[in-house]
Length: 452
Image: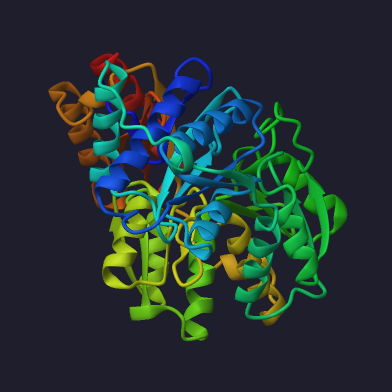
C-alpha cells in the first residue's frame, strides 16, 4: 500500500478513494495509536471534529465520529468551521485529538482527513505512519479491542465553537479596522460565516462574494485559486483591499485597491515588517519554503531580516518555527503561520493582520507590498506522471542540469512532486519572463518524457 498521508493529511475523490470505510478505519486507528502513545492516559479522551461545506463531508464526518466513539473517544462536533478554527479549538478546549474533513483548495469531488494532536498541532510523520500501519493491519482481519457499555464514546454538538474562534481572532488584532472597505471572497467554503463576522466586528465595512456554500460550489471559480471575481469586485466597490480564502480558509491571498494580486510572499514581507515594528518578530527571522520567490529573499535581506527555507508544505515551516522559536512563517500560496496565535495557517487571521497594518499606517496595500519585487516565476503542473521518480530519473536530472546552466546565477529551477495530488510541479525563475516560460516548458516536456 502506498503512503496514504500526504503533506496535508489524507486526500482523494470522496466515495471513490476516500470512502466511509477508510474514514472510519483511520479514525479508529488514530485513537488506538494515540492511546498506545500515552496521550489518553488517566482520562476519557476527547476529540474535536469539524468539516468544510462539501456534500461528502456530511457522510465522512459521520464515519469519523462513529469510528472515534466506537474506540472510546468522546466527540465534540463543531460543524462547518475553518481548519485553523478546529486546530484552535482542539487546543483551547484541551482536547486530545482534532479531526478536520476538507480537501482545502481542491475541487468539490475531493475530500480529505487531517488529524491534529493535543494542542492543535499536526501529527508527526511517525505517528501518521503508525496510524497507517495499524489501519492496514486491522483492515486485513485483525480484530479491534473494542470498549463496551460506559466505555464507548459520547457525541455532542459544540455550537459555541464559532463564537470562541471569532473572539480569539479579535483578541489578536493590534488595532481596529475602522474606515476600511474590504471585499472578502470566501470560496463558498468553511469561512463563509466566521470571516465576515470577524472583519465586521473589527470595524471594517465588508462586501462578501463566494459566501453562499451549498455543498457543491466550494472553490468553484472563486477563492484563492480564482482571483478574477475578487479583482473585479474590489475595483467595482472602491475597496481598500480584497481578501481571498480557499475552501478550508487556512490560506489567504489579497488584492490591492487597483485589483493587483498580492501573494503569500508579499503578505509575509508586509507582516514581517509590521511584527518587527511591534517587537513580535523573534530573531528577526521569517521561515518560508524553497518555492518562495527570489525577490522575497532579496527584500528581507535589504530590510535586515533573515530568511530560513524549508521543504514545501506548511507542516515543515511549522516544524522549523517550533524547533527554533520563530514567530512568522508561511508559503507563497498564502499559508501564513503566526505561531503566537495559531498552530497552522490561518487565512482569516492573516487577512485581519494585513488589514490592521493598512489601517494603522494609512498606506495602501500596493505601497506596502512594494517592499518586494517579484521576479518572473513560471509554475507548470504536469499531471499523470510517476511523481515518485522525480529524484531518481537520470534523463530528468540531465534536463535540469541543462536548464540551470542556461539560467546561471540569475534564476533557479525547482521540480517537486505534489504531496496532495498525482502530479509534478515545475517551477522556473528568471530575470526575464520569456526565458522562464521557455525553460519551464522544456522541463515540463522532459518530465512527461521521463516519468510518463
